[in-house]
Image 1 (cartoon, rainbow over the protein chains, first blue to last red):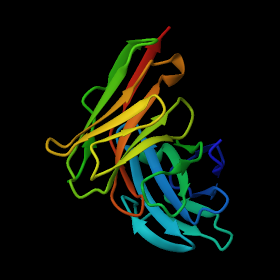
Image 2 (tube, rainbow over the protein chains, first blue to last red):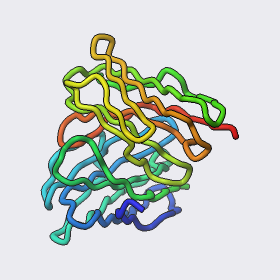
Image 3 (cartoon, rainbow over the protein chains, first blue to last red):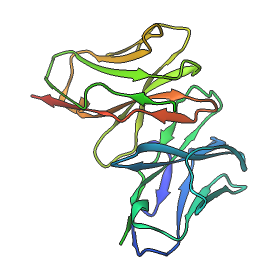
Image 4 (tube, each protein chain N blue to C red):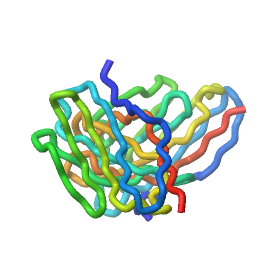
Length: 113
Length: 111
């Protein structure tokens, strides 16, 4: 158990819809990361938050947004969903070592029909 | 663009053998290189990291080698066990632990 909790585990929705994925980081971790894993693109970094502020941005679409709340949990919002957005979405958290050691949750599997 | 890739998509070994998983990277500016293991239905799990100014680091049954001359990273697993069966990813730290992952190698361990 990594200590990172993600909900929901599975989500099925239709094209054009909007969904919110939720993440609770490990106790004490200030950094939260979102990654997308798909068969064709592999594991792709989307966005990072540190103590409520956006710190780094990766290959995140404009239709996607995220935030980190004062209690450090984070949400990833995906809107105007397309078939190609079907993927596993992972949240990870880390301490301050910045060595690349991340603690990943078990992911939210999104299926867009 | 920058990328981290793997030479072998699948590696099959017998229990007790040593396994070597390879990775090529292209961004020499990364300060850390990392290996992750992902079991079916789970998130990636950190195995070991190596700082860019090192060429070898050992952990429990694992060794990571970094060859900066040829931009090559490898993970050696000693006495491979069935529980080691998983997909292994190399990754490079682009700063603040934002990682670029390779495409993964599946390790299959037969009893």
